[in-house]
Length: 372
Image (tube, rainbow, N blue to C red):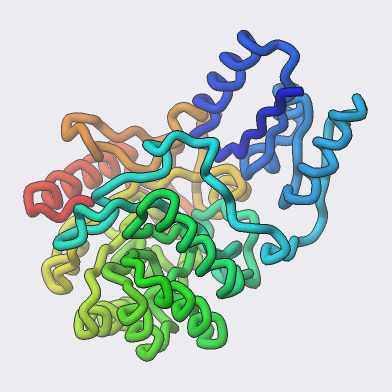
């Protein structure tokens, strides 16, 4: 029996539905199981689309669901409560994917740009609770054990000749030394080159040095805004002075720095473009990734919009995007919500102003060769 499983994130919802419908047209007897953030937020709606849905983390539920399919007893909902031990499961094999879906070059920059690479994930969860994030596994972070990390990298090197990795972990340099040391050492034992992201505060300098020794070439920092007021409103909990010091540390140790910003956050100042460009000029990052605020289902911004003065959130999931103009400079951004004119935090900006700020900042970054 054919079974297709989907993990759905809101910006990919429409594409996932199109794929599902296409498969059903060709294989009408196949079963389709849905999970992921969007399914967890809208279970009733998703139950109408899939033969079964999985709520919570799905490793155990998937096994149960497959056995139920084999016994012709598939249930509409599988709810796996609590968290799983991610080290009780092997690393994922990629053998059913075409090589082009696994391997790509250009993951790293500069002298390492020609290395063939792929994306990996060695942990689950994030200890921080940024209010624009729809992460369903807030709280403690679970890391893959060093043995499984090394085995997965060696598998990728052998089967796909991988020489570079893009770590998709929320914290590529873990905050706690007890987590960071074995994590980074395991990666370093494989001789791979890699990039990742990290918190802009709380990371020990010794662990940054260890990351460099372990093959790290670049670190991305989710600063999000140069405005401490905006950072406080979205529970980011960063001080700009600490970010500056961390950037200096990364550079002194020899790592490239990429900055992530979000335009349209509540409470950002009228001169956000000028302040952002000034910070970029002062800190000289390797590149900048610019996003537009999009209240994703599951995030506090989406679940409690009135707290932030947000109204009229669209339910057209096709419009839920965070990056515009990445490949086409003429592509214009589009917002999926509006602010009240007077919000709990003060007078807001109009959508027209926010969108113009995004375009102006993106164009300046592109002209300076900094757009990621």
